[in-house]
Amino acid sequence: MDIATAGQLWDADPGWLNTASYGLPPRRAFEELQAALTDWRHGSSDWKPWDASVGRSRAAFARMIGAPASDVTVSSTVSQIMSVVATALPPGARVVVPDIEFTSNLFPWAVAAEIETVPADRLADAINGSTAAVAFSLVQSATGDVAPLGDIVAAARAHDALVIADGSQACGWLPVDVGAGIDVLACAAYKWLMAPRGAAFGYLAPRVRERMRPLAAGWYAGADEGGSYYGPPLRLAADARAFDLSPAWFSYVGAAPAIELLNELGVQRVHDHNVALANRLRTGLGLEPAGSAIVSVDAPGERLEAAGIRAAVRAGRVRASFHVYTTADDVDRALDVLNG
Image: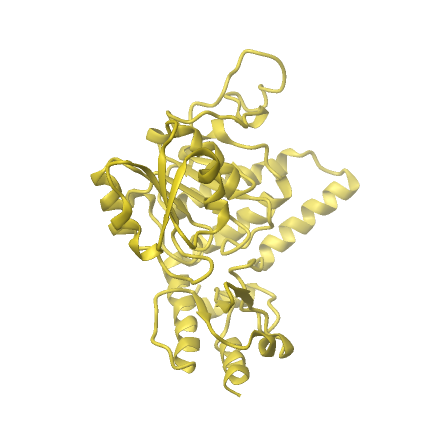
């Protein structure tokens, strides 16, 4: 299926340039969710079919990032995943974080460790022998800048520091392979993975899991699925499931078909489509092309809003973001407004 054909699987109104805030569901995801909600309304189904979507989602996300499903935990938010990862750090640990980092990947470290904030483009240079971990977004929410992952990993490995990445603005359009040296990757699924808010995934490398404490453990983290409802002893899964939160089922009902579709299309093809549209906007505004699906510009956001074009304002700048359902017509409408 080519991208132009795939675009027909969505019902996006013209002018949606705001996937970095939330993604739009493909029709198959919306329909599966509606069917589950109907079953819930009438009490016509057990919960187990909804729960099966969690396994589908976990497997699909693992495939997308090149990880075994056994290394992926499920949660509801990035900050919850990062807060538990913080238990792997020794007391007084130093964590290097970009000064523009979204707070879901900043506040957990500020609570649990000593943080040093530096400009995002100096992250690798700031890693030294006293660094326990470096935490950063693969793609920055405010600017759309793509992190130099290779440089960061090389510096972290030279000093035995953990590499902890937030993939919420990357996974779904930017090809990501945790085999490149990522120890932890957390991702909220309601943006580029186009799931309902309430689903999140975390890749936890074995070398990190063995140092972590599953502080939020409950029945869903049990070794025996369906057999960990009541009573001692503590019996947790031997893999990343030990860090699972009990899932918000309907969020995963919507997540599974959306992530599976992205895998079917191929993230590299989605990347090429998204970046081409972002560069179409940049070129039309007299800017050099870049390698991101997010464009941050000084522009009159109120004019876009008045014209029915939905974007966001972040850090005082208009942020436009482009995904598989975005078209050249969407971009050209925005250019007509901004250049008019």
